[in-house]
View 1 (cartoon, rainbow over the protein chains, first blue to last red):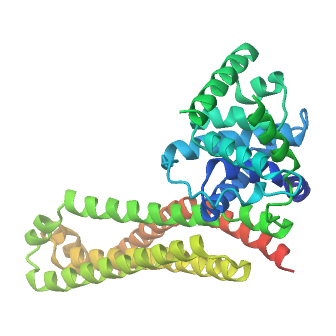
View 2: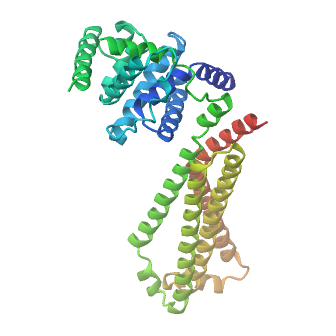
View 3: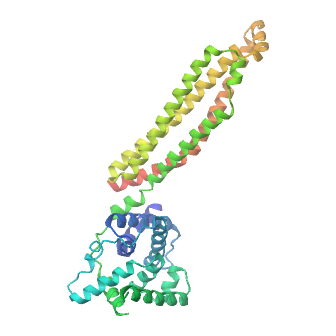
Length: 164
Length: 212
């Protein structure tokens, strides 16, 4: 019984691991911290897995647990975000389909997002994952209105960071 | 916000830039909690050690021993006591190194070996403690019997007894109490460390399955 539970967990996490990777990238600044957070999230997901009864999609459930883990861990460590090395986090956006100017804007935007606080990052993460406000609200445990208001504030904050 | 939507597009099309984690690695991660069991073994053993030290300080037996006038015995007791502390500290050190090893291990094989080693250490630790308890109880009985002034009456009775009835009764009674006492402690250890060892064992079994 517990064996099949474990197998199904491992299989589903493997399929959905990019969710976790993306969260890790948003909340950490180097590959060691990335791997640590990935492992921590995996452990927390596994601990919570018996309570996951398939009422929602695995990915929806994983968003919630993974973001919570990232936020709590981030709070514990209180790493300073401003010392992000520029190169370390941006290699991934270099894709052929963007011209140089767009690429630069994406990079700057991503840098701005990195400067947000942990809760704001969670909202932006959900936004980038193209979730609607109902799902954002549900995942983060806030009301839909609140999620909208918060997102608007974050956008304002990002504009300020980009145009100081 | 145009930039944010640009980022969103890039974000979503970006699925290849992550080094993918294999199923085997995920298995390993969720069995990494071996290290938390080992951490608890370390914490509990330290607390237990502190408890014994506190008890031996709080219930100072020196007065009692003095009343028996066995100063020549005292030196041996002290030596035994120090040896005991040294051995226990050595065990604590092993628990600590086990913990460090397990929490830094990356290979499954190594982790399995470390789990086995930790198990062995805990078992040795429990047996050592029980053995030490047995030895000190016997020593205590012998000392009390030969030297305590309170037992003169019993000794008198034994001397006047013709067919060893009293001494047999006393030995039976003492053995009975010793066994009860040791069983109680054995249960105590079983409860304290057994739970953690079982978790380690389960982990070991799961790791073995992955490793095949």
